[in-house]
Length: 83
Image (cartoon, rainbow, N blue to C red; front, side, top):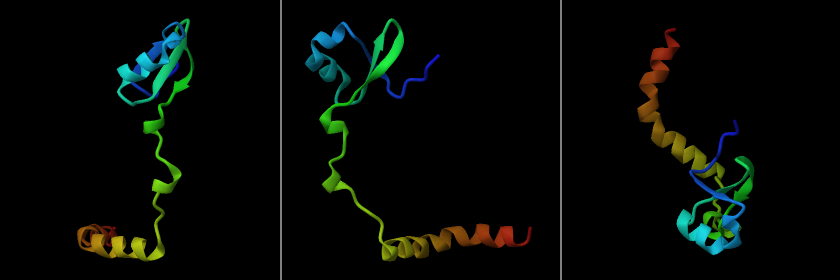
């Protein structure tokens, strides 16, 4: 049995009216089935993040995050040092 990566499904017959399938899914990806077998996924445009909206981590940003989490992580590191 194939594991579906989405909660919304549609049949090939329902794809005759794809706008209704996408409306029903509420902007989420839809698994397309034919004879109860997965054929593919229909992904609406709003579910895909545009490339210009992606953010990349910088070295300074990563170091700042590590410093901010040091207070929370230090007791665990101290505990593990004794093991």
